[in-house]
Length: 119
Image 1 (spheres, rainbow, N blue to C red):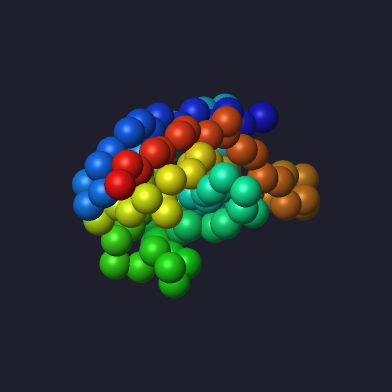
Image 2 (image 1 turned 135 degrees about the vertical axis):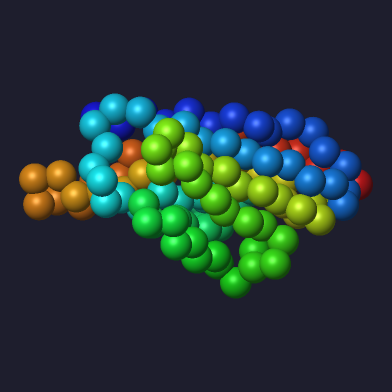
């Protein structure tokens, strides 16, 4: 089992920045992938960015240039730095961890952290 806890959400003004954290604990494989997703009100959940346990990160096109993903593999913590925030970035941000267990692809989810961007 893996537990994920997001933190860092809150209220921020348009143009501001916020750094979210996701701490993972439990039985974590040396190779895993951590993702950040978000779900805005009335919309489907979307993938924001992903980072391999090696530290290589990738971003959905919509977030390239404004969001930066980084990680501390020793602590199993990933950070999502969000800059130039807009009201449309208002959403619940979730992290997930994906790894292979007994030959099966498993994905664990945190409960999310709310980010609200005021106009």
